[in-house]
Length: 161
Image (cartoon, rainbow, N blue to C red):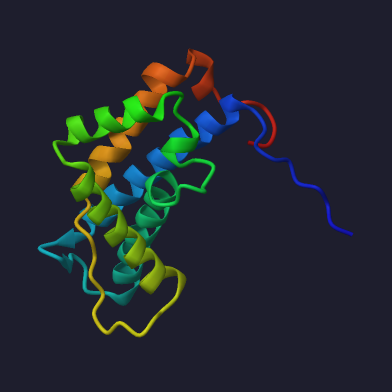
């Protein structure tokens, strides 16, 4: 018999989870960058190469939840109150066009789909640069914190999230 698991039901829960995903993204990006130097692992041991690579993978997975999949419940279009205003502000603050961001979003999804979710037939793994990902995640986090939520949103409740 399957046990029913608690689901995200309230707006506050969804906002909190989007904040957590943005934090998880940034933390794993920091771990990845601290383990790399000039696109090479700082530590030659296989263990540290694997840890650093895993941080990159988690980083990209978390970002994709926030920006790459419109059907994801934490995608910005499903969380912000006025998506068109947020989208304009996002591009303005990142100093990119909608077209450039779309090309970037596709490159992040491609990495996720071709090398994380499935090891497809591509022979070369192209790791996207992560500066736009960091900028967009920080802008999204700030928007939720400053516009969408109350001070209680970031408080951790007792019980399952």
